[in-house]
Length: 617
Image (cartoon, rainbow, N blue to C red; front, side, top):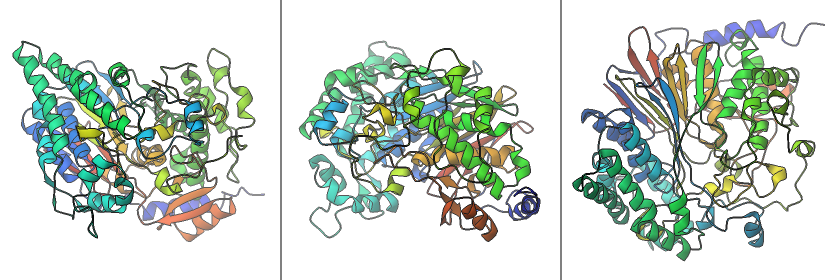
């Protein structure tokens, strides 16, 4: 009997090639490639990209530009706020190394499984003061600026301060505020900031209306004051920026943040903010066909991309054909395996027990996992593997894997977010690079609308607590504990080839992030697309992993396909146990920079999926 694939796959390969955007150079994308010789700045909003460009014009490097874009997009509430979290990968051309920036907030004092169970909760809430970890974005911005930037904090925060004093709000944010007005009306400081027309039919600002955040502007000005005072006292540029850091986390800003949090029912203490710190880390890496791909480690989901690449490296995915049935099935199954490991083994590496990273990223472990793929049907009951035989140590939770797919004893809680809202929750992305070789990839998030503003700081609190679990059976490395960081979805990416930058790429969208980044990477490496074609190309998404938000729900076999997927591919996938849904745009939205070794120039790509925008020179 012939293989299921023997007749159709070769025909489909050529049909896929003919329909794909990467064959003809004349094939146009909806957005043009950005070509830059000196620098490239890309982020989630046009005004945010402009802030990055301003830093380059002032003589700043890519770190300065990324920090300015982070400040601007946080001020614009581009699916994040100042009280959220930041994580970054930075390529330092002076050392030839990639460094990770861990500025993820931590659970506050009193945040224990017992506490949430006493509140009648099976999971931490998605909204409100009890959803908030400590703020991380201010610290992340200031540390990476102090360590790797050139400009002062005053210069980098100037666009954000200007915007906080008043900027013409964009329709996307204004309408998001209006949709969430009833919830935000419950929180007095949020109501005052977000609902300037409270009591009228439309409480939120209109698109184009000047949106003013006086308290936030004053908080940011306090940081500049601290820097200026330190400089006047003879401090170095770095130490002056860190004086501003101390004012935020150990001074009057921290005190007001804690007061505002606790007034509204939060758990934060001044000790929580004072004890929190930014970690500069060595990222994890896997090589795919000679390209070294770097991700942050298990406190985010980043290693799943590396695990999936390790599994796929043993398969000839290029020969399967772009978005053929076999290709989609191969990637879906590889992601099933990697994400099952994520859901079970990932957590804060600074808290015991140690995550089995060496085993998870072992090529031999990947081959073992790949050998279990059913090439005829989807496996809706895939289990976490056991990476411990591929490194030293004994698996302390092996007994939990057998019951992984059974319902925990804890009564499930109805989620405050619907499944798709939760699955793609939050985030923006930032990409910056310059001619000196600095490259920065960031996926900041948290403090998105609807956010609880902490007192008179103007700072919207994070909602990342919901990414914790309360029962070790649902994630033994990610159980909430005071001071611990939740395993987040945020996942910037950098790839080097021959020791030099090759790709910098990131995307927003919760649990969809590393799925879309995996396909983007393969679009470039396996299918020869340029960076803009790869950013706009039709991706698919699995919902089989457990959502990192809401009720942590899973929908095995469900798959999001692009409207353009041919009828016969849809039919074949359904025969294999998949349940397709469809959308017209399924690309991300991805932001990326490709480094052209032949010309020494940079190519910027920004997906046509959302409002992301880039500028290059």
